[in-house]
Image (cartoon, rainbow, N blue to C red; front, side, top):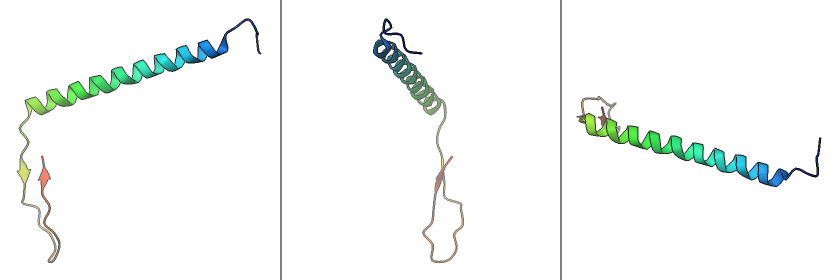
Amino acid sequence: MYDENVDYKELYLKMVRATEDAMNLLIKAQQECEELYLQQTEPTVDFSKETAEGETPICSVV
């Protein structure tokens, strides 16, 4: 139902802006959590993985 008295473009833009704000908030929270995790843990490198002959050895950060 279309109502010519309603500014649909403005309604749409308001929703898009709110969606973008929400996404940016979630991204920021995730980045902050990742930083906290990295500050609280000490990464170690595991070279103990065995490889088949001729393969490049791999290491994993745990």
